[in-house]
Image (cartoon, rainbow, N blue to C red; front, side, top):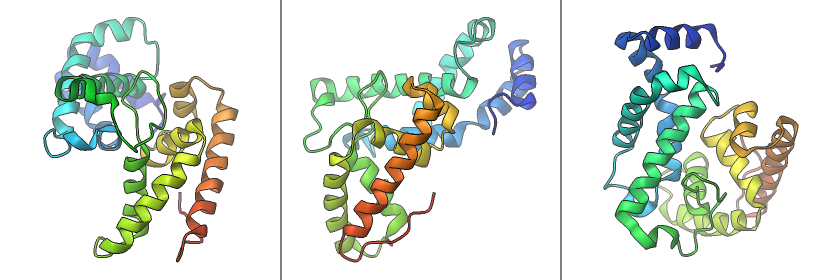
Length: 214
């Protein structure tokens, strides 16, 4: 969905005037994308303790209270604004539940240290394995996860984050560029390079795949 679509603008105008039904419809359009972001960036120690839906609901309440200010001066596209609020709620939960341990991820190397909860290589490896193996292949998955995580740790930080944003959060190139504060051309080149590097990693593994669908 284009962030500049006429439907998004229409729903925003109606929501700003107090139309709760249209506001709900607008938020519903973005819930699945935000769920992917939360699932990818939630610390593994909180999985099972915190539901992604609760994080998103808290962010939506925050968005409702700040909607008038956003409409008066939108500093970013609407979805990226929702994503920012959701990530801030997730970051608050990390700090509340983990405290000083929030930064202690052991072997899990952060993909990108910005103002948002960091995706880590273990989470990205787990997501990749969900695409590449069947749940019944437990032994294969365990071995591949370790090797894939180590390989991801050797990739450049920005390349890993571009891969996470584009392939798993499903941000388009413009959204990725704005999120990372780089030019769209640079974001596109980073994504292509990351995919090539990822394919090389996968095919170098025993029984590795020769293709990686995007």
